[in-house]
Image 1 (tube, rainbow, N blue to C red):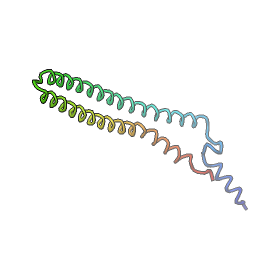
Image 2 (cartoon, one colour):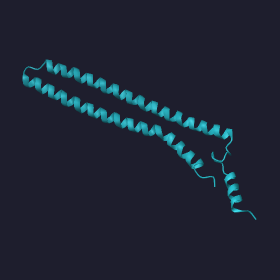
Image 3 (cartoon, rainbow, N blue to C red):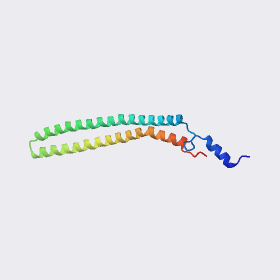
Image 4 (tube, rainbow, N blue to C red):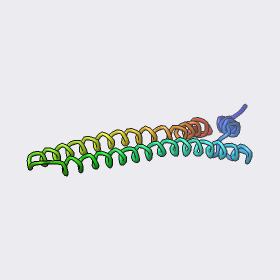
Length: 137
């Protein structure tokens, strides 16, 4: 008759977990490669996303400089204090609105990129936990 402790020991030995020493070096190397692959995928996604964010910043800077040049023309062409004040107020309001819109757009792009870049890492972590996070018994 088999005792309960013998059955538990056999069940534990039959499971492949990093905690009971039954993983081979090949298996550990494969796990490492899979983890590295998920990091490379995440880095690639991040690089593309942050490249797009950089382009959005440059687009915003170009639009801001163009608006600044238009505002300078309006200020120089003002014929009265009222026109000068109106041009300055219009420029300030437009600059604020453009800055807020660009900031919101870039913030959304950043959050989206970070979420997409973390997905391969999250999926890999869930896979590891699913396979190895359970007790050996």
